[in-house]
Amino acid sequence: MTPQNARAHEPQTLSILGLGAMGTALAAALLDRGDPVTVWNRSPGRGDGLVERGAHRAGTIDEAVGRSEVIVTCLLRYASVRETLDPFAESLRGRTLIDLTTTTPDEARELGRWATEHGIRFLNGAIMATPFQIGAPGARILYSGPSELFESNRDALAAWAEGVYDGPDVGAASLIDLAMLSAMYQMFVGMFHGAAMVGSQGMPASAFAERVIPFLESLVHHFATDAAIIDEGDYTVAGQQDLYFSDLGDIVRTSDEAGVDSSTIAAAQGLIRRQVDAGRGREGFARIYESLRFPRGGEQQEWIA
Ligand code: FVH
Image (tube, rainbow, N blue to C red):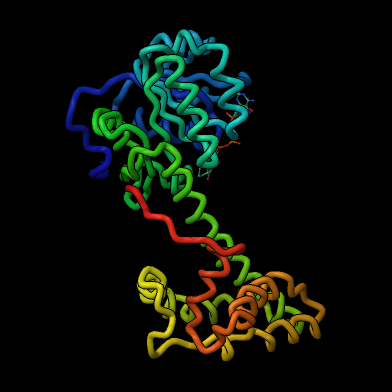
């Protein structure tokens, strides 16, 4: 039993709507801890293993809602959540809804307004883990919305992952989730692009991975240095690689000459060139942030957490 699975209080019944890979893992983690759980899925044939382990299968959404004070949705996307919940708004009145479906910040805020209009308490969640990681150390779920809802459900939520509270704006968890995923996907695309470059000369991707993993590992802590420069807004700090030096032209040309798609690295080059064209070529590489953050000019906003 992991520390996350060590229960401090009496368990409450949760109802989970959606038994895809993630909903099933969430329900299983509650059962692992001995918590009662009610499950519902749109299509039959999912959740047999959970029922065998003691979960109650609700035949209807109304039944699932009626059995618990806290209803958790883990469905494909925002549209599925609204399609599922809209007809049951009155049944949900006075209960707590925790949505763990991946949504955009605005979708989460729209769901929050819908919930408020119907007297439903709403906490937004964003899962930063795979189904296999649920209930294991290292898994994290971001939450945003009323702090008292996060606090009052903390024990139940701890069955799944470390809960991180990201403030009262219900959209915040979705924003941070998608920003983290953006960083992750672009890092992987970078690795795949490098693999395609060497692959054009026959080098296996696994051989490239062996080289690139320690290289990137040695660099990743520089994120913190760059982040501090971005927050200060002074890209002239000594010791930075400047934008003239980082033109990326060699990488674009080599890709093109090898017949490898250069669009991702060319996009990065475009961000650099925008700053060079604005007369900032002698400033540090982190200045690319300004191209991304203010594509049409603008000002930094204050972060409210
Ligand atoms: N799986 C993962 O690694 C990621 C990790 C990070 C967070 N995501 C998000 O979690 C949501 C659910 O993901 P999932 O992996 O469980 O997804 P599926 O296995 O594809 O299951 C989808 C469930 O959604 C149900 N569903 C789809 N459309 C509707 C609808 N219109 N009405 C009611 N239910 C719907 C589907 O039901 P069925 O097809 O079996 O009837 C599944 O239960 C997701 O937002 C990830 O981004 C997971």
